[in-house]
Image 1 (cartoon, rainbow, N blue to C red):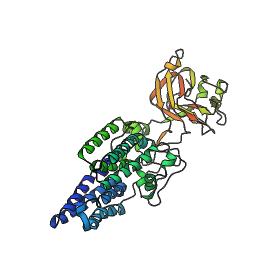
Image 2: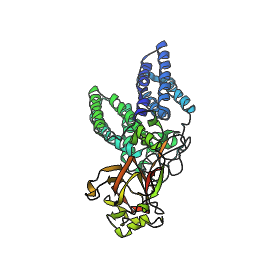
Image 3: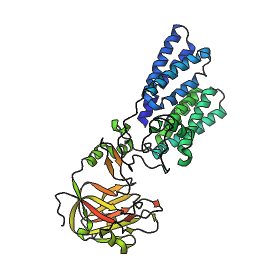
Image 4: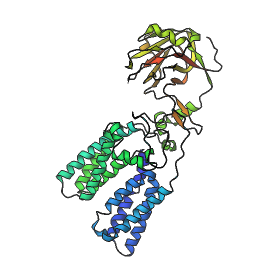
Length: 436
């Protein structure tokens, strides 16, 4: 999202500069500045795509703040707005991979259903990582809201119109990133995203915050500008930052998966060697668990209607199962099938493996961690990665693991649902023997 935002704002200073010069020039220079104003507005619209109206709106407001523009305001507005309308009218619907039913590409925002725009293209599943947007932009929005309020109360020298418009944009971004999701979903920015075609593919809160903070900085004295710039650097430096993947793939609907795993690891997922699923029942393992040990035999009975569950109607993060085999085997991963109890998938998982079952299982080497568990990574026919259903608890290791015992830990928290396993199976290579 940072790269999209940078591209959207790259031409904004040129548009503002031409607008200022347009108001102070006359004759041929006014005509020349209008030509450059139109050109830069077109370039800004082309770079920012569906976010162009948001940036053009700030330039539109600036037209009424320069005294020398007078009756030429309509001409300046025409030069700013027309290229944006032209770009949006020719904007092609981006290619959308054929994600299957039940796929996810961004963490759940906790709201039922998908908010769709009133017109234009609508994706078939949420593509904006709302938790990451709030994590990254809430503190800068809060800092600039406090800073702008202080400047407005203490300083009387700022350009009031520009300042008020800037503080409005900053407050809107604070509402979008600071409110609970059920309230943020009806905030002005979220409503604007549902109205503007394609806007629901990119969060507008960062655009609102950056443009609003710039307007606040340029509306007052140079000392206010320096102070605000320092504040901006401090808040951005200390704000929690989600992982960012660089490259063309990061701009795809599957950007979150590229950020989390990286291109190389996703290639390993896609090019995984052939395998088969072998029931753990064939190896007659010994089992122990953190609770309900009497029901552990159900994960080996090859009946998906029976299960082992941790009990209590919730997951606390301290549940585990230890599997001890009769002899070492090589496996590619595990399948923890919840069977008909498809809502009882784990919140997060950690798998430990060892060839020495006599040692403390808490100290066995960690083979893989899935925190949080969002589902297995799969691919569309176009090669776009996505998360499959969370009830498909299929865990693959980065490399084959030869082990004698396994410790399967549920390390997340989840209310209202047990952690259940109906059948335990191993992923094994095709040339591995059925029994060892």
